Image 1 (tube, rainbow, N blue to C red):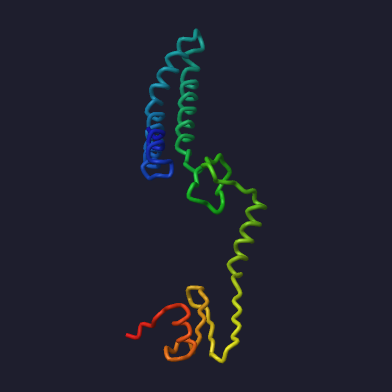
Image 2: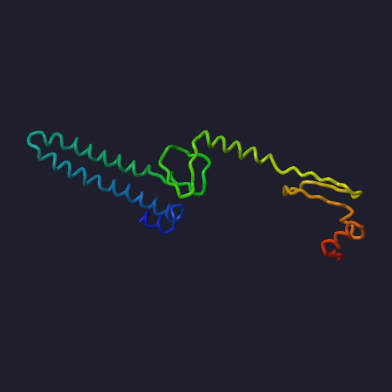
Amino acid sequence: MADLMGGLMGEQSAAYKTMFAMSKAFAVAQAIMNAPQTYSNVYTSASLIPMIGPYIAPVLAGAAVAVQVAQAAQIKSVNLTGMAHNGIDSVPKEGTWLLDGGERVLNPNQNKDLTNYLNNQKDSGPQVVVYNNSKANVETNVGDDGKVYVTIDDVYNPNSKYSQAMQESFNISRNRG
């Protein structure tokens, strides 16, 4: 049922994860509920062995139940650790991972190199050089959004010759209101 839900909704969906957890809980409960029947079956079979059967039957039946309880614990420990289609920085433990097309796996050295490269890119950015060959006052600043703003006072003034030249050259008009 969990496989069907994974196929329909995707293996990262909440529905699939819920169905997987329910299937796991059912399997654990089924293994534990079968323990008394297992004990009874093994005890009955072993006690039919001539002479020693009645003496070894409880030990063999107990061992069979212990194996069944260990299987229930093993089922309970199964987790969905092998899927990280939305991204993961570091694999928490060794295991088999399911990948989709286009995803890649890096070894620890490659991951370290890529992480260092990406961290260094945060500090680098375009260097803007403004040459002012006019008599206009020019100011530059970097806004909180990371954009570079260049303000030319004479163009900002709607009555300046620079502003009028911009209006004529680019066929633009000012909004004065």
